[in-house]
Length: 148
Image: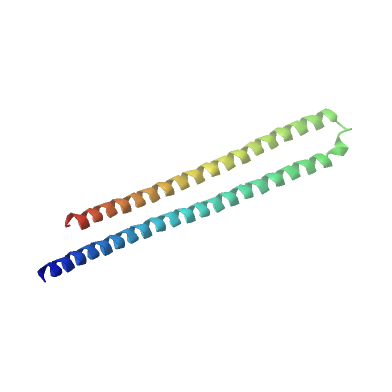
């Protein structure tokens, strides 16, 4: 009878440790998944923000380009009057347009760099949170089985 009682106690201890282990793992899993979902949401948000910023810059560049070509078309009657002046004016406007285009490209590159930095910071924070969760899991598992 005493052997049966001892067996039941051993089984109860084993079942208790197994249940506690499953609970600890489930909690750690939930935390890791929560962090990964947060990272995914932050990535989607940042991507949408970057896309909107780049699209806005593109629309502005297209408007500038259209305005340039419209102006060049309206300058047609000036060509016979003073072709050299018209050429100089066109060259100056082309240089100005090129400078604006470079600024648009530079702005897009800066926006992409800012976005990448933001995503990197978010990923690093997520990594730290996951690492802390797994460290806590390891410590908790050692506590559970140290008493065994």
